[in-house]
Length: 386
Image (cartoon, rainbow, N blue to C red):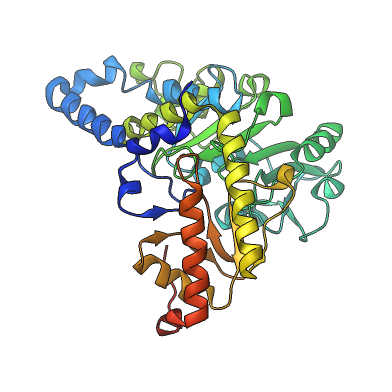
């Protein structure tokens, strides 16, 4: 069985930086560069023939690999550019009309998701935003159509009680759209066992698959009967027949759109392979040890920890509220320690399975030294875009 730390050498950036931002952009496996070279070589030598030699079906074959990681059966997960597109396709399956036109989600939902659903008010949706600290499940009733929620909240790394939300949604006939962007690859997830109608996510973070690789899971029984209106030629039963009228493909394939993002899909599989090799259970075990150490170190340094302390409620990220954290973040970057921050939350640190305990000790020591000496004050007012 592979020791997770033995895989550090596969991630080149670890040799140059203290890379603790895997909750934002996971470290790139060196193999991703190789696979992008394979894409270029295939395009160069096979040309248009590449479509029939694997390119065309990649949204499904790569989707099946994601499916293995999140507990989805084969043929139920397809790839898209990002989560906004994936959730827009879900929305396009439904009429937003009374008596079932409510969309319920938590206040701490990711902005991209919130914006998409807020925009549906002009189409007839009633938007119900559940205040922080209140139960999403309690807000779901017979008028609820969709419940687009985050498995792990991006600001604090808190794992939501998805099971309770799914039970309530099932009782009243509502559909849960689970955003697993902050959990897939670091927190165990079984979309089949949960019974969610839909799940979405991406590869930028813990899956180490890079940008341009969102994914959409559709529960198989729904995939056979729903008809999305946000659709493209890949969703046709016979796309290369170029028929003038739409006939939906079977299953999750009908949730595809246009020509796939082939180079991104090549790159993504390098990250997925490593995640499958290590295994989510072992990644979770190591993540809990590392985040527990971070909390211990933060306590010793006198920093406020915003993330949950209970292991069962904590994702892969630890958020600390530190005086002047925006400027501290900038100073850390100049010292080769890569993390990030979120307004109103604090400094976010996201170690993955390949990070070491010594890296965490070094990072927190540097934060404490920066605050104590005021080294960050020269960056006051600085706000990083990323």
